[in-house]
Image 1 (cartoon, helix red, strand yellow):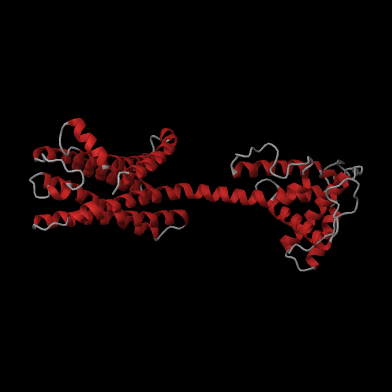
Image 2: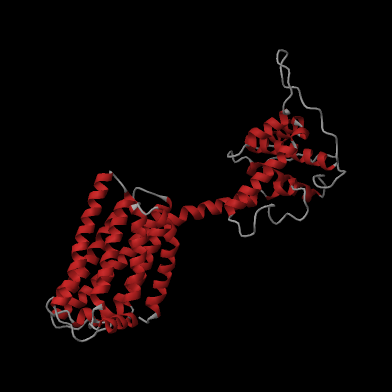
Length: 419
């Protein structure tokens, strides 16, 4: 592998780690967040310190040949432990059991990680090896045990996490299942890395030279495996946010016909006032919904419930579903109110809504029906906007003018089926 094959993934993982730092600061007591950051951080460090130029620089800086070997192996041990701890905390369960299993895995890998440099300094590895340390010193006392220990720890982590993810994936769905599936692919690649390295080491014990497996095949498996594993852990965290943004953008676009009908300032077709061009889809949707609600509120006195009822009945008679017919009725009522506003017609007298004992004045029946249909959180604005868009499209096909935008146009727009 070239040096860039190490440094590029390291830089990518460093960016992911920096992006997760705010979450780590806010949730530093959350073991799940700590495990995610530890996993991403150690994966990036593995690539950085595993690059031949870095290995050479560390050896030269310390004055100890091959000291980079146990350093990289120790980082890999922390990475393996982070994977296991993250899976245990991510899957959840009784808090006592989660804490017990977390402590068990941390203890096992802490012992293995501390043993690596001890074994290295007990052995002798005087000749610097930048790429084939595993196979070159496969038969050297203590160095041999160090190599087998780090490969065995990596193989154990990959096997356990793969089994846990496969079991868990059968009981979940959505982004979590997608993330677990990607994780299984990453852990299988990590397992293949350890198995390939171990095969070359065992072959060296019998006098055969399979160092090509260790230096040629294993590093790409580790590189791809670490990146896939990081993506698998991040996917369930990022996926729901992507869904939310996509849903917000879709709703924002679907509200466009209603916003075009209601806007009063020319030149605002590109986006609602108050929403910056860099605003997130969720913010743009919220701003547009707020402005639409405010504009509908000003139409209250001109909303004629008779128009709504006649349009609803006509749409139902033409075969529209109950929901589409109701939306068509509301759309016709709103369009008629906008046309009346543009024509500067005087507002009708408010309707009397009180009783003989308690006389009073209130909102019109049309305003009450619209308020009930499009109250915040009900999702009623999108069906209304869709009905407005269908009415506009129908008019364009027939070459008519619904009178919804220009002043002086008093004719109410024709009512269409909600289909």
